[in-house]
Image (cartoon, rainbow, N blue to C red; front, side, top):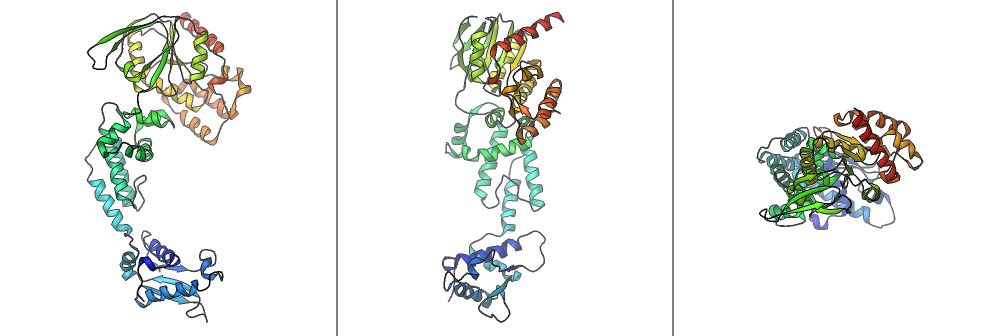
Length: 428
């Protein structure tokens, strides 16, 4: 009887796949052999399914007769109990064809050609391409590219190449339609995109584990994000077509309003009578601060890492009022410090507010234990040039093994800290 993939037993396919997997190991020259044992091949030695061993033997004997395998039987168990199955390397190609399996060397060659076909880029994409080819040269899988699914690798490279060329923001689904004619394809590729950006883009290091902050730093956006703010500020806003403008006056005692990322990105500062500007990481703390803030203080909610539109807006305020103190209130943990470092990298002198040992001690009863990930993230921040003044706090948190959420800290405490800071600044 002749066999093909459709009528080969799954148990036989397991043995054949194991042989080919061994044959594909780099530099392997010794015998390619599967030794049958009760742990990995329990079905072969079990008496529960009558006739299974006989059927397995028949199919393997057929392959032996074709000269593709060599069978070795247990002593005195000829044609009954197999001891080992060896691959005849010279005709291994026949097994690949039988199983419909593409040789690993063929997959590597195809992926290597795909990498070589990419147009050269500077920066992180070029670094990724070079690293992927080096991994292939060293017989390693160039994660997140797939050796087994060339189309997946082709799509991922296409997306990465497009992202590397972006010089202005675009919505993820809009780019996905432009590239693939499918609004959700880029979402499927997002884990691979993030893996590459986090490994090869220096910019991604500023954003810790915040996926969307990393993507936004590379001009990939979600639909319009609205950012609440309040304080004595007058803005000139541009219309949708950038031809019409309107002025918006935020009176000191008014509650907060929310403006879109794009509105902040294009707004011009008309006047700013504030005595300080405070950015706030979390929404609950932002709302609590609104009730007790001095009317002369601008308060802005960052929703974690500030998006690029907000960074542009804050930079405009910085340019309009170079003397205005900028302070940031966030979590007393690795994420809060990452966000502070990110703000400082764009806005220079941003002072921590409530992110200090004194505030931590005042609310230590509400502290939570650090995870292993927290410890690793804090340790990595010690060398961050934006956080030199925060090293004592980082060391303190790691020594105690604790962290403190922003929501545990009272808003009036933050107002007191802010007043103390401003008094210190005036006395200098």
